[in-house]
Length: 188
Image (cartoon, rainbow, N blue to C red; front, side, top):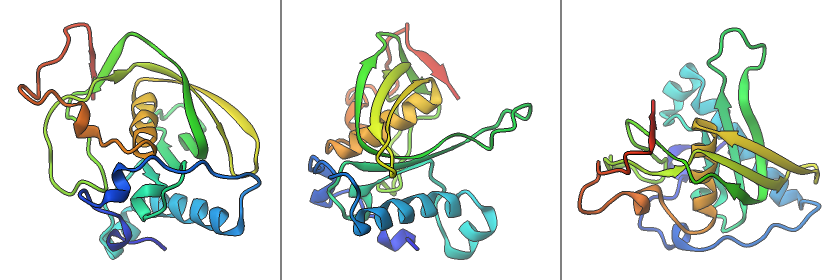
């Protein structure tokens, strides 16, 4: 089980490397990596387990964040819609994900973004595409296409950035962190 001590922190060069493409079918080591990344997210969203092991809650965890320079990220976005039977908006491990389409319309989280690998708070808006289409393979080797909008799109763009050596604060306006195009949607 991954703990906070296993999460690579900002400043480690692996976070700035482009990950290596993952070979399919997955090796046993890569299957274990996928399993452990998803396990961290599940545990981090369980209040009792998170408190017991001092885990910061996360909705995404990329392989470089656990010291593996590979194109693989786990995503676990809870569904807050009480009328839905689905527990998660998205629960999957994205292998070799590629954004194939992105909207011109931008979106940003009103409270800014955070990251398990960035322990300090870096305030500012992080503009991203409001809609994205992502192609990837899952752990079973199935090729998938995801069309996402709003918060799930933000989460996946954040995670794919990790696989390409970028951190969220790279996108914050350096002179004025809260300066943003007036057409950008702010969501909470």
